[in-house]
Each structure stands twice: as structure tokens, then as C-alpha cells.
Amino acid sequence: IVLNLINYKYSSRVGTSRRHAFLYIYMEQIGSNFHLTLVSKMAGADGDDSLYPIAVLIDELRNEDVQLRLNSIKKLSTIALALGVERTRTELLPFLTDTIYDEDEVLLALAEQLGNFTMLVGGPEYVHCLLPPLESLATVEETVVRDKAVESLRKISQEHSPVDLEVHFEPLVKRLASGDWFTSRTSACGLFSVCYPRVSSTVKAEIRQHFRTLCSDDTPMVRRAAASKLGEFAKVLELDYVKSDIISLFTALASDEQDSVRLLAVEACVSIATLLPQEDLETLVMPTLRQAAEDKSWRVRYMVADKFSELQKAVGPEITKNDLVPAFQNLLKDCEAEVRAAAANKVKEFCENLPEDNREQIIMTHILPCVKELVSDTNQHVKSALASVIMGLSTILGKDNTIEHLLPLFLAQLKDECPEVRLNIISNLDCVNEVIGIRQLSQSLLPAIVELAEDAKWRVRLAIIEYMPLLAGQLGVEFFDEKLNTLCMAWLIDHVYAIREAATCNLMKLVEKFGAEWAQNTIVPKVLGMANDPNYLHRMTTLFCINALSEACGQDITTKQMLPVVLKMSNDQVANVRFNVAKSLQKIGPVLDSNALQTEVKPVLEKLATDTDMDVKYFAQEAISVLALA
Image (cartoon, rainbow, N blue to C red; front, side):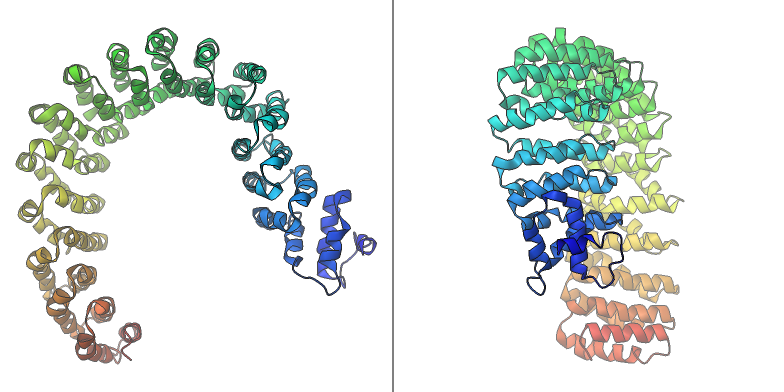
């Protein structure tokens, strides 16, 4: 059989069993490692066909179509199960190792699959067999493939015994760390921390040396990879080595000529600071951190601003008061908008973590003046970032300071030309409500909210509608009925359909929040009154509202108040209204009892099913079918 199949290598396979063709291709791939027992199983004349699908998958591993190869790789576990653990180790894995020259998406899928292959090769005892293909994948050019290979290597490293880790895994890390191409060296950076805690002291010394070498590598990409893993590696090192090795590496990387390396060193600073005793922070970490906060590259300063709250917790209250407060002020006043936005986003968190004994004094003296400047910043992203957190300061500063100092800032932001700034303020009103009370809030901020709700730009009105249920929950039902109910009803007759649609959804959320009784007394009468509006669009809005409210209001209100109005509208002169009546009856049908369906709904739908308009007939017949009224 084998010799006959080989004769088909360059000839047409017409007349050859498709199963034999698949087997030939697989034999060509595996080479001398292939066992004839599998051929006899798969290609047995009219014998066992159970392995035929596996042969198809194997064939697809070398198909010219990338998608077919990808599909086969994603089902690699199926192939491995069919082959068994021994043949997976001795045949499938060597084949995969030898053929790692494929499209990136295929290699990515392979790297992911191999991370879950431990049991398919015989368990932890044989997990080292997975290292060769993953080592090859960890050296490819495409970053996402390398990252996934490293992720899988980290995963299976935990399944190695300490002995296997030193015999098989640690040599792999060394090979990658000393590879000729930068790709292997960058991959090695992610593997030091997973093997370091479980190896002997001699091997630990070698690992530390390799990591030091990579931190001073000639290639910026390798130094960048080392900097990104510096904090993680520091966490598994003994404290003495953190002080003797890691601090010097941290200082060197934070002074690197490439800003992409320096900014990653800032990230590592958080981890390193949490490991060191308080007395060592001032001498070992703070000089480098001060330097980073004033770095010539805005990207490094941005990273400092982005990690500021974490740095603040790591260094403690005393250093925060002496060093971080001035640094934070400078970041809030930075010449780059991206840095100011990142710092503004941390204002609330930074203030919350200040020492309680002098928190208010620090905020009022040092932070609030900077915040006042940011309220009128020229960049909308800065103002938006500030608006998302500034309301939180009211709970820290208390009622009097909020009314005197913060309310004017809130009001200014509510009138800002940028919609996102205004909406960020509205979405956090509950913070201020808790501190100053609803009456004070309504007098100062509500007029600005009403002004937004009537804005000429429909997208601004739409955004306000989306926040109305949240606002209603914060203000309470009485205040809502007094100040905002009229506004919500006005949106139902807006000239823009998107506003009317959003207003309908808004009513449903309000009913869910305030209850069916409130809806019956406040909302439903006004909605049903629109059924007689001369504008057919407004009459249709009545139907849309009934669709949305029926379930929330329940069977009683729907049957007694809403259903009669819908049935009456079936005689509307406008066909669009009539077919929406049919759709509404289909929608509210499940809420009604069977008696109402048979005696009231069915006759109307049957009448609409004979309507002169084609669409009305269609939707009426569909409703009859869905409600099982035929």
C-alpha cells in the first residue's frame, strides 16, 4: 500500500481512494517516523473508518489553504487523542517542531494549543516534550506569536518537577537568552521569574546573570522586554538581591537613552517600592522616581501620572507629603495635554490616599488651585478626565467646602461646550447629592441640566436622555415629578426619531425604578393622550410606548387602560399606524389573559388581516400566527 501511494506523488490521483491520498500526504510529512500500523488502520480496505476524520485533519495541516491549516491546528487535540500519548510525543510533536514556518495566525493558534497539551503527551512526567516546538515559536518574528508561546511556556513550567525544571526548562531559557536574534532574547525575559523560585542556588545565580546581561543588551527591544519584566522578576528574588542587583538595573533602565525603555522602568518602580523597607525607599528609589517625573519625554511623564496612585500607596504617607505632592502638582500643570489628562484622572484617588491628619489642608492649598485651572483647560480630553472624578472630591472636602469651592467648578463644567464633560458631571451627581442635599443641588445645577436637555444638537439631548434614569434615581420620585417629568414627556414628541425612541426606552426604565402605580398615575394618562394627536408620528409613539410599558406595568393596567386605546387606533387612516397596531397587539399579547385575546384582540387582527394595505395584512397575519389565534 505504501509503495503504491508513493507512486502517486506527482501524478493525478484520479481513481485513487481519497482516504489513501490523505494518508500519502501524512506519510510525506512525518517521514521515517511514521508507523505502518496507522496506515493499515486508516486505509484498511473496507475496515474501520473511524479514523478517517483524523486523516482529513492531518491532511489539512499541510493544505495550501491557510484557513484549512488553521482549522486543523485548532483541532490538534483531536489528532493527539487519536494518535495516543506515545505517538503524539514521538511523531506529532517532532512534525510540528520541524514545520514551524507558516502564516502568523496558524502559528498563534499552535502556540495556544500547545499550552494545553500536558495530558495529551502523558502528563507532567512528559511535559518537557512540549518544549522544542514552543522554543521554536518563541523565536519567530511576529510579536503576538512569541508572546503566546511565552504564555504557554510559563503555563507548562508550573507542571515541571523541580528536577525536570533544571534538566529541561532552565537550559531552554539559557538558549533563548543567549540567542543570536533579538526575538529569542525578548522571549527569554518573560521566563526568568517562573523558573527562579524552584531551582538550586547555583542555577539562580546563572539566571540573575542572564537577566543582568539582557538589561544591558545592545538591542532596545530586548532592554524594553527586560524592563517590562523587571518588577515581576524582583518579586521572586530574595531581598538582598533586590537591593544589590535589581536597584542598579532599575536605575540603569530608568536612564536608558530610549524613552520606551524608561517608561517601562516606571512601571517596575511600583513593584520594587512595595518590596523594600520604608527606610530604604528614600535612598534607593526616590532619586530615580523624581528624575522620571521630570523626564524630557512626555511619554515617561505620562506613565508616572498613570501609575501615580499605585506609587503613592507603595512609598507611604511621609514620602507622599514631601515628594509626591509637588510632583503631582507639576504633572497637573504639564505642558503636554496627555500628561495633564492622566494626572487629572487620578485627582480623586490621590486625594483619598493622602494622610488624614492634613488631607484637607493639602487639597485646599496644593491640589485645588491646579484643579481650578484644569476646569478651563484648552484640551477637551483633560476637562473630560477631570469631570469624571472631580465630583468625588465633595465627599472628601465636606459640605461647606463643596458649596464654596467645588459647586462653581461643577457649574462651569455643566456649561462646557464639550458634551462629554457635561455628561461626566451628570453621571456623578449622586456624590454631590449625598454631601450638600437635593435642594442645594437643584438650585445650582438643575437649570444647567434642563438647558442641556433642550440643546439644539440632538446628540446632546440624546445623551441626557440616557442619563435620565440614573438622575431620577439620585433625585427621587417627588423631585423628578416636580422638575423633570415634563421634560421626559416633551422628548416623546421631538422632531428627531432617535430622540423619540430613546425617550420611550427612558420611560420603561423610569417605570422599573418608580413602580407601576407611579406609571399609572403619572405617565400612562399622558402617553395615551397622544393617541389623538393630529401628527401620525406622535400617534405611533403612543404605540411604541405601550409596547415598552406593558410588561413593566403588568396585566391589569395593560388590559384596562392601554388595550382599548390600541384597539381604537386600528381604525386610523394612516396605514403605518394600523400595521403598528398589529405589531403592538403581538407585543402586548403575552401580557393579556386568554379571554381578552379571544374576545377583543382576535376580531381586530382578523379585520386588519383583510386590510387593503399589504403591510397591514402581513403584520396582522404574523400577529395571529404568533399569538396562536388562527
